[in-house]
Image (tube, helix red, strand yellow):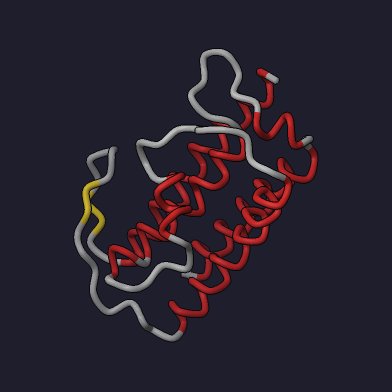
Length: 151
């Protein structure tokens, strides 16, 4: 699983560059034809990773329920975020992956509630969840690249 965690961290570094290289206004802008903005997509990847890995393993997530409710599948941008909120999301980019790796290395993921994702793939264990999560984050990286071109 070292490779999966390596990919996850590399993707999170890419996501961090969008936060660092765009203004708060750009991060919050929902261009015509889109439902969400750059910062929503970044927060959504954090929330989805926690749902796929921790919640489906029956373990407590590292995020607040409010954050999960704001950025889970099926949600959309509801308003502009403050710089403090963006900074908090930026901090979660790495802390969540690092904690997941630490927990994985401690072998805390014993059970998994099988889950069918939108691609119709069935996740049956935490390893599959980690692999699928990298695919999912790649999709949202693509959305972010399209959003950036529309700014």
